[in-house]
Length: 131
Length: 66
Image 1 (cartoon, rainbow over the protein chains, first blue to last red):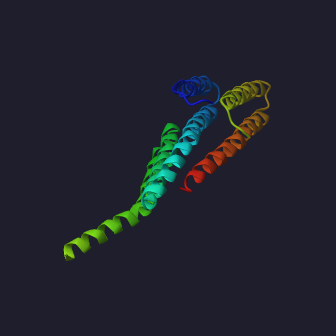
Image 2 (image 1 turned 90 degrees about the horizontal axis):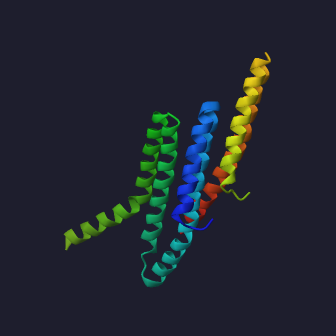
Image 3 (image 1 turned 45 degrees about the horizontal axis):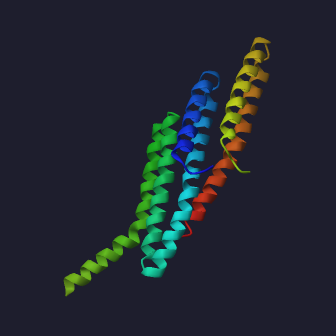
């Protein structure tokens, strides 16, 4: 599917209409359709972003040693996307408690992934102070 | 399995068919079979969804290689 906002919008609207139609007949199917629609949309977006990130990654490796931070940046971003994706789906289905727990766990994962960066900054500051 | 837009319509169709079958079976007085049909419909849709989630997570994992 070519990358354009029309594809994204039509996919979302199709999912919305079908969810409304099926909600009357079969409640679970409505939740399934919203899950599948958001899976399609996010997968569609990620597949297209992947090629751009490959270009950026190759460029950063050649220019400077910053690829360590770049990979952390991507990991944090992806974790945030997937955690938010799951949390929103849980809220849609009416399970607000599960949604909040997923968000909390997502934040914990992001914190763990980003901790090396914080530590290196702390180390830098402490070295500066000793000067 | 490459997933496209038609999968949404497939799931909607399954949902509606299961609902209609459910009503028909209930009117015919076979409540237990109606429950079985609903469960079967949900299972079929779940298989599709699990496969899609697996493929989605493969894409995410591929992006974690950076």
